[in-house]
Structures are given as structure tokens and as C-alpha cells.
Length: 389
Image (tube, rainbow, N blue to C red; front, side, top):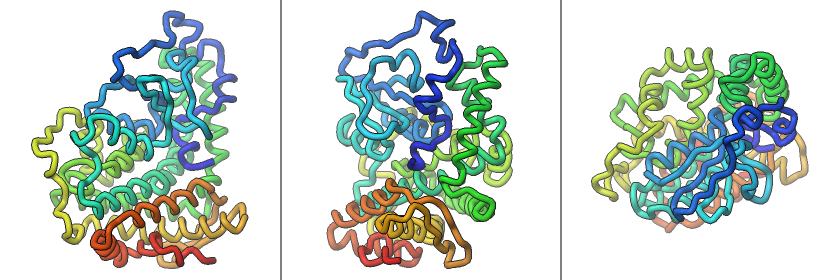
């Protein structure tokens, strides 16, 4: 499994088959079924209301004003549609010709290139800033998600299971008995997987401290006059963070109470950024932070979290995965805390992709990127000599 297959609200094929008659309205709403899209433009995003990666892509599509429809994954509207090769990930994007693609990071890249190219771009034009955007997107997708998953299935496991039953599996008009049965099945499955993402009694305090400190830093970044992470227009990393915050602000009761009390600006940012279709971009080349200048102190503080937590985690996972280990332990936050969890093949790939992105930079961009990464403790991510055990 990867974090992206353990995402909130993602039903397995076995779960879908086991859900009661009437799931997705198949018994009560016979008027539903696949709809053709023959305009050559409109995309279909197949996902789940609770999935952070679904919402990441959905928020992005709205901002870029790309014509799309949102349909529930596994519902009647997706019957007979193609599936991408590999493990099932949410969301699945259906292109106008019916071809299917998934993995949110690569979806955003394809959408940048294939849809309205150069208009309302979500990738900074400066190569160094584009690399930072990629790194921060990966950090949100693969590390911030640990906080989302941990809180959802420890603090809010009862309401989260019920929410998935009502919002995705069955619908808000479902019978109470069916909701309870599906909620219990989803809850048992997801709680059982907490250890896979690294949530256990020893790591729980680390995850919770990281999350509240991350909120504090994002709150300060917004208060300093930065509407988004890399300027006054959004990049892919913003949508990745917003996607992970979605269940933690909009869905899960106790976690949302914590988040609202701790970070009112972050909550306002989420509420105003989930639909940016009306945000004007008068000059396609403007709105980003000044190229070639150091990142602002508030963003440097967020990068230090990448260095404190994600960098040592990613390096250790990669080294142990390549050695054939099924679990690993490492020290995070300057060696102050220990982290234990199963190794992940996908996150080993993430490290390789980060290094590939860095390798594509010109010499001047590499120098600038390293000047931002080294003080934050992130430079080992782009060094091929740093993953030794």
C-alpha cells in the first residue's frame, strides 16, 4: 500500500462488492448510469468526497477553469469505464477519449500540459521555484497525510466511518441499519491500517506535535501577507496541502474543532481556496515570489519541517526498502524522536522522482535550490550519496 491507496474514503473493490443492495443508488435510483461525454473537452473526475487526493485535483480543476464533471468512484456513472494500469488510486481521471489516468501528482502535470496550457498555470515559471513546489507537494501528499490519517482514524473514527457511508457508499437517504453496517466495516478496515502509515502509540505524539506546529507555521505564513505558499497565486503544492486539510476542516468533528481553534487563518484560507475559479489572473507571468531571492522566512520555517521529519523518513525508508527490509526505524527531528513503520515502495520512488526533478535543473537553479534546502536540512534529498544505512 501507499499513502495514496490508504486515503480517506477510498473503498476497496471487495468493500464495494460487500455493500448492501442499494449502494450507490443501484436499487432505488435506476435512472442512473454511465453518460457519454462527446464534446471532446469535458473531463470526468472519479473520486470520493472524503479523499484528500480527490479534493486536491478537484480544487485544481476549478482554479484552472478546466471543464469537468465530478462522479463518485464505483458509482453507476463509472460503470464500464477504463481503469489505469497498476494499483487502484483515487482519483481516477477520464479524458474525453475515455482513457484513464490516476496518481494526483502526475494528473496535475498532465493537466498542465494538455488543458489550457499556459493559462492560469499552477507551476511557477522559474525552474528553482517549480522544484520547491514539487517538493512541497510531495511533502503534503506523503507526510502531511500521516497527520490527516492519524487524526481521522483515532480522534474521529466513529464519525469518519459514518461520513463515508453517508457521503459515498450509500448516500444521505440510506437506511440507518445499512449506514451502521457499512460505517463499522469501513472503520474496522481503516483503523486496522493505522500502523501501515506509521501511527502507533509511540509515534502518535510526534504526529500530533508536527500537525499543530505545521498549522502554526502556515498561520504565520498567511499572516505575513502570503496568500499561497509561493506567492499570491496557487501552485500544485497549495492544492496538495488543501486536499489534506479537507477532512481536517470540513468533515471530521473533533479534528476540525482543533484546527479551527488553532489556526483561524488556515481555515479561512481553505474556505476561500476550495473554489478559485473566480480568482483573476491578469498577468500570466506575475503573482509568484521573486525569482532568485531567498524564500520568505515563513516558508523557510515550513521547509525546516520537511528537513526535520520528511527528509530523514524518506531516506531511511528508501535505504531499508532497497535492502529488502519490510519494516524500518529511524530518528526524526534532529534525532529527538524515533519513528517505526513498514517500508513503502512508492515512497522510495518518491525520493527517486525528487532527485530526477533536481537533476533536470540548470546549474544556476540548482545553486539557488540548494541555498534554500541546506539551511532547512533538506539537501540530503537531492544527494545520491545520502541514503546509506
